[in-house]
Length: 457
Image (cartoon, rainbow, N blue to C red):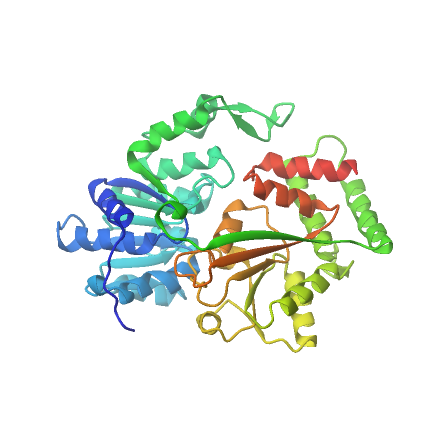
């Protein structure tokens, strides 16, 4: 690999200096601004210029561990002296990585509890970097609780993300509790709720959702402002244009009857009374499957309803005239049906789940590539392979939606415009998910409101 000389933008220098000057820092950079090289530059300076740290742990999504951090150290000439080891794979392979002599140890977030509670590896890291801080927004998760046990041992911590509160301000408490141990937003979630929120959706004494108090957002941002910098790509980079297009598909009378029948059956199975968050989420999942054209039965079998989205996908691929398209799916039966259709059409494709297929995509060898937002939403640079993304099935997660779009809409994209296609089934829950994404309103209440709207039809 040919090393490149790093010529940082002004905002990149500012962010690097901010990390170096602040023992606790939250770097909220939108996708494509180069947060990894910014952070590695700061680590390099802290290790070998100021000698303030000696051993660094990076916690990141699995694919980011294997495809980003090591590659960035190899890419830039000023980072060639950094010794980095990636602790993924089997337990034996992870232990070998932690016993290696390195500056930076990269671990996937699923193994945080293993490292701290089971591995026997001394937690003697004096700097911690959490790539995708939003992965720690759940204060009840095992990874959060494990990391909090050793947080006092770390004298420097950096949180990186482009979507810190994709599901609302409530997410911020756990993230900043981990960063500053409760100094700014409080040590207890209950106090945070009472200070900045009011109960919203509830059933008796059970509260499902909270809504911010007036001026709560401003007050929260003021509290965390001294350790936080936030930047948008459009403010600092010459980004390509972004065009979002909706393609409506319409069910036939028979298909509509089938959809409505299944919807009624699901509704009748619900217990009486208020819709809780649990059954609202389950019901919305079933409705989204139906909108896509198939639904899992109780026995796990796939029940086909319609092929309208497959037909529209075929038309969009044909209209691309051989230009590569990325297809995002959500359910496994969506992937199976898409693959079956592509095979029947003799269209070459691959699933972007391995380094080899990612390389083939970026080299322009794949007319169609399939991607699942949950496994490939973070870290992948796919902009060299194409400029069109088709959402076959939508996700409620604003974070995954934005991150997946940013695989193509980012710095280095050669096309002047990135086109994001959405295949929407008319008069189904698709329209409500799309509306929530457009309004950036991915709270639990939005999902429940959408389900209630479906029930009323």
